Amino acid sequence: MTPKSNIDETHLLNLFRQMLAIRRLEEASAKAYLQGKIGGFLHLCIGQEAVCVGAIAALKQTDYVIATYRDHGHAYAKGASAKSIMAELYGKKTGIVKGLGGSMHFFDRSNNFLGGHGIVGGHIPLAAGIAFRAKYKKTSDVTLCFYGDGASVIGGTQEGFDLIGLWKLPVVLICENNQYAMGTALERFLPVPDIASRAIPHGIQSECIDGHDVLAVQDSVAKAVQFVRENQQPKLIEVNTYRYRGHSMSDPGKYRTTEEVESHKQKDPVKLAKQHLLNNNVNEDQIKAIEEDVKEEIKDAVIFAEQSPPADDYASYTYKD
Ligand SMILES: Cc1ncc(C[n+]2csc(CCOP(=O)(O)OP(=O)(O)O)c2C)c(N)n1
Ligand SMILES: [Mg+2]
Image (cartoon, rainbow, N blue to C red; front, side, top):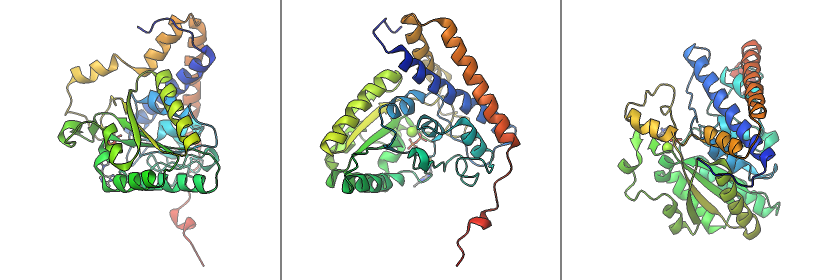
């Protein structure tokens, strides 16, 4: 159990609320998927919420975030509404990209959330480009680039790392090490199971942290962001985390034992934050009020998605002379 400590209760309540909202949003989308209301692929981040919420809490609003296809929590933490996310999953016109992208291709220019990318590792060179612009224009904005452990071994990742290291670009690379790439365990695809060390040949400083305590994640990422902003140099953080569900909704996850999954649930980030709040004498009623509020927010998001008009035909967006 987390000991009593001096924490900013309002801040932790806010982080707890965000993580809970992401958890409920993911659960609601899984339900809608099984009801056949959401099509295509659906990758959930249940179990990993402390990573996106803690890391993005370390940013300024003008900083950039770029992520993989497991992007719902990242978009929400960067400021997208549950309504725009759910409507996108439903393929509705009111969605975050007008219902034309779906789960893997969120994009929210107003909050500097630049995707949502389905090609594993393909967005790392894009992060280099975003950061190059910031450095060139001297904006001091930092790019936070999330990627998975499986992306470590992809060519695009290495090419992106080289540019980021060579040009000393203001990027914080966050490897969400959830121990698996689809159904393949880390030790079956990495000759040296130390992801942080893969930054060294690219001239990028790195560290490895635990990803269950949202405040600890925020603290480490905040230090990295400050270092990157002030020194105009990149940094890589490997964050150890775990996804409770399969790779996507079509994966029953039979390559893991129930014991393994349950052992990770003991360190659940949402429960940990709640316990932390209770240990610091935050009123239980205050927590219950947040839980109710989140329930309403997600219920409203589902109603909004169901009642929204369908996306326009793709053809109406094609370029015409
Ligand atoms: C270039 C490319 N190769 C293969 C795939 C198929 N694929 C989709 S997800 C995935 C695993 C990625 O695992 P990881 O990077 O650990 O991310 P996680 O799903 O665990 O968040 C693979 C191989 C792809 N989308 N893109
Ligand atoms: Mg993974």
